[in-house]
Length: 287
Length: 179
Image (tube, rainbow over all chains, first blue to last red):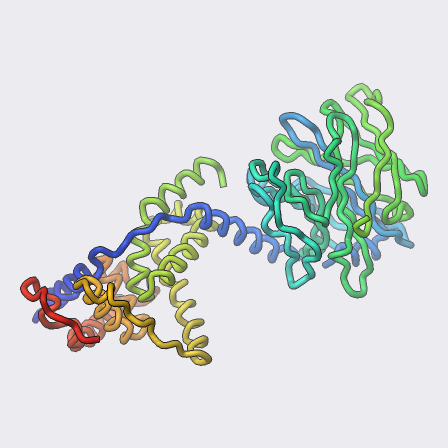
């Protein structure tokens, strides 16, 4: 038997043996969801410290605001831990828009020798990656979406320090998860804070730090200012333009402290305050 | 991934799924494993879709992912099997009533006797009908190695009595196969 004949013999065996093998439908959703999760894991692995360590070292807390295009605007503030030494944090720098649905790096910078990055994550339906990475406890996460959240996308904001996920906040459209709270009655220019307590993320030796929160501001706001009740420090949130959205990043003064209150004010392009003062509702430790 | 890229990816998956699963079935010998393998390979392709699209041959790119993923799976499986060898699933009466199933079963058992790389070479060369050079590219080996592996693989398969006999002919449908 020649080589060609042997090849044909094998092809015949394959043809006969594979006849009538049932066909199945391609699991498009599972493949694409798996692909997005894989991409998130790879990006997360590529980034790297802990917010708590940085906050302690820098004596700063971090706050996030975000404004979505096409309707209601959002802004965020949050307060970090009480810290003893106030070191000015590095100014955030905008980073390129990554993708429409998935991980978007909102801003990143460096503070006291530690890198930080804010990442917005959108996914359809309930955010399926609420589990903390690296074996961190998942806490009381329900993982179950409220019926009204199943159709839209879920949006959260993560804070990475030295490339490691250290805190997570938000939850617009996400499953009702005890890791975050949302005042669902908020609308228009009624400011409310959505905060993430750190009870699930505190890490041995670094304390409980790193609140991430955001809320809603008027559509026509061009400036967001927070005045912290404890030290009366006033901080301008720095706008970060990402595609059609504007995200505000704010470093909370050291003495503001974790769970401290602040007053948020919004100003229009003419410098006129929009609406009333909005007390920031600090969230900490799952209160 | 932009919307148009996502649509292109979906089209790609839709068009290739069945063929990839059949190839994977011959590589793994199990339908469930085959679907898992293809799903994993396509998930990887999704992440690298820009590179896949930009390559000379997206099919070749994905085939290479599939083959490499299977090689990793095979390595894991070998380790697993050290700790827990499971008996083959018992055949059902319904299965044994059709010649196709008998042929497939014989084919899978014969392929299972081949070393992983040899099996892959044979499947890509004679099932996917790829030229030797393409098989070599998919596996990252030389054409000479493809030739020798194909030759050895074929020799073993041709020596397997289960792949001979009337069950493979058109004139002996009444043969009862002892298992």
